[in-house]
Amino acid sequence: MAVRVEKNGTVWTVIHDRPEARNAMDPASADALTAAFLEFDADKKASVADYPLGELDIPPARPQGNGGDISRGPLGPSRLELDKPVIAAIEGPAVAGGMELGLWCDFRVMAKESYFGVYCRRWGVPLIDGGTVRLPRIVGQGRALEIILTGRKVPAEECLTIGLCEYVTPKGGARTKAEELAQEIARFPQVCVRADRRSAIKSHGLTVREALIQEWYNGREALIEDGVAGATRFKDGLGRHGDFAKIR
Image (cartoon, rainbow, N blue to C red; front, side, top):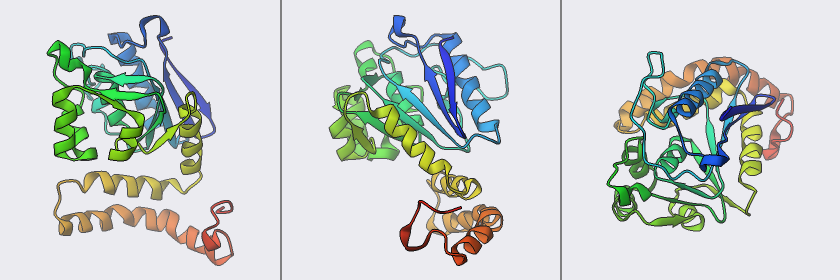
C-alpha cells in the first residue's frame, strides 16, 4: 500500500510511501490519502495526526471526486476541512504540490536540509491545491507573491524566519519532533482543543465583532464539557504554576 497509517494511542501518523517514484502522487494514492484523513477525522478515539512529507516534486494531476460528497484535491486531502489538528513533518524537498500539502496542515516541522518551492513554475502549471490561498495567509501577501512568482527554493531556516514552518530539526528528526508535539496536544481536553482551533481558522476574514461572537458561541460547548471539569482539577491542585506534566 502506498499509504499506511501508524497509530500510537490517539495519535495517527499518516504515511505516503512510494520511494520508487520519489513519493509521486498518482490517483490511487491521492484517493487513499484522502480516505485516511477522512477516517482520522471521523474516529472518536483519534486526536492529532502527523503527516510526513518529502521528495514531492510533481505537477498536479487532474481533479477527481473521491466517491463521496467531498471533492478531493488533485493531490488528495488538500480541500478537506478537518476538525482535528494535522502536523506536517518534512524531510527533504516538498515542492510544487508537496508544498501545497504542507500548507494544508496546521503547522510544519522541517528537517534542516528540507525546503519548499513553487517548482511547478518551470512547467507553466498553476497552484491548484490551495497554494495561492494558504501561503498568503501564512506569510503575508507580498512574501507569498515573491515565493509564488519566482518559484525559488525556500530553505527550512528561511521558512522558520518568515513563519512558513514552526520548528527546524536536525536531518532525520522532523517526524520524531512532530510526533512529540502531537502527543503533547493529544494530552489536553480535546473538545477545547478543537473549539479553539476551529475559531482561529474560521475567524479569518471576519470583523473583530463577528469573530468575537463566533468565538463565544463556538466555545460554549467546550466550556461546558471540558472547562468545568478542568477548573475542578485545578482546584484540586493539578496543573498549577504552569505544570503541564500533571493535568489529569
